[in-house]
Amino acid sequence: MRKNIVAGNWKMNKTFSEGLALATELNAALADSSLNCDVVIGTPFIHLASVAAAIDTTKIGVAAQNCADHESGAYTGEISASMVKSTGAEYVILGHSERRAYYGETAAKLKVKTELALKNGLTPIFCIGEVLEERESGVFFDVVKSQIVDSLFELSAEDFSKIVLAYEPVWAIGTGKTASAAQAQEIHAFIRKTLVDKYGKEIADNTSILYGGSCNAANAKELFSNPDVDGGLIGGASLKVADFKAIIDAF
Ligand code: 13P
Image (cartoon, rainbow, N blue to C red):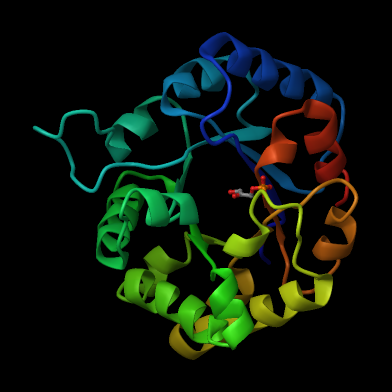
């Protein structure tokens, strides 16, 4: 059966020493608890190797927030999937709406990044989600479906079964405006149905679909109690151990 996952996305926050301290503090806070979900932290690239070395990675997985769309070579400033993997990270967040909106990441580019992540043994946490106008005009089902189809549906069933999806409505990210539990369940069920139609029930049932967007200690339990919401991708509330742990404890 699919895993429940609480994943933090630190975004562009925390200096190296601050990030190491945050990861170490989280590691200590979780050391004695038996967890009912997988826990992942998505750090900036420069933190990955040191964070992975400082924590119990059997308990807390480490994620990059992006990787390059090329294997290696003359791509100044880029970080490849194999480099990410070599740090001890096991996951990579791909297709975050901030990367799509601010860095021009197209469906085609994300398809390549996903393939390279898988080829290098990373688990992609693949983000999808509509903007406010798309929600209000009702086209959000089509938007989300296209994001999945255009980047992921040429994967083999075996490769697709390694993907974690994160539904993050852009209007809920960093706004304090969370999707209601009913809104989350509705679209998560739609996403799972989309997967059933392409890959069959078993793979769809085994795919973790996370919710992201102003998820916090106060609303996590209600969101996670939905049958098709398998955890969260957490931005702001992943930057403080107490807040993040409270979300983990919602499971
Ligand atoms: P917030 O939890 O800060 O709204 O961010 C969500 C997000 O974008 C996680 O990837």
